[in-house]
Image (cartoon, rainbow, N blue to C red; front, top):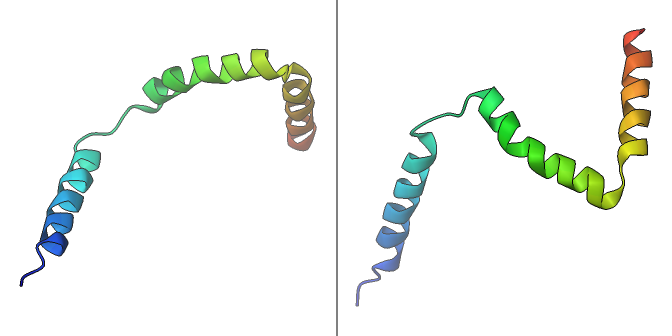
Amino acid sequence: MAHPAPRTYLRTQERTTHRRRTGRRHPLVATLMALPLAVLLLVVFDGWETVTTQASSVGEMLGR
């Protein structure tokens, strides 16, 4: 008896791979999509102090 699963799997994999390659988002669009979630996580987990600490560390590393 034949095993149709491998061919079906390959066809499904080709379709999903094709969908991912059809277009790319502009970096600004991706940023605008991720920004609300990032703000929500900052508010929910009270991460403002962590963000300011990291920002100051990066500023010191850059010499500012």
